[in-house]
Image 1 (spheres, rainbow, N blue to C red):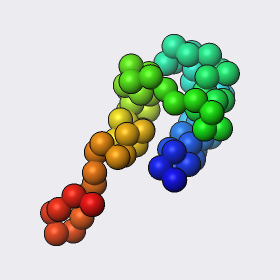
Image 2: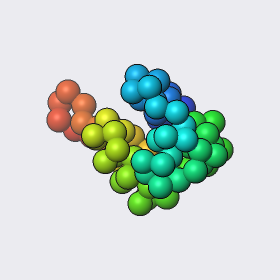
Image 3: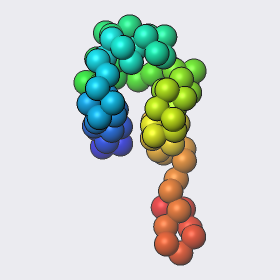
Image 4: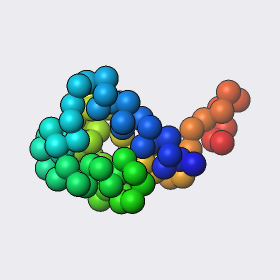
Length: 81
């Protein structure tokens, strides 16, 4: 489920910023094929690529998106969910 959400978020980012998969791949140092595989859930980016994605998207898509199980989001009472 988490991976589906990040794929949608990345796809929306590319569309909203009028970036092709190839252009975004060039920004972060991976191929268009790698971006396509991320978007289809066939490949998971290495940690250093996750950081490059965070930098390229100005923090819109960061490690907490990719590793949601490791970064629990606090609930309203201040406890992790």
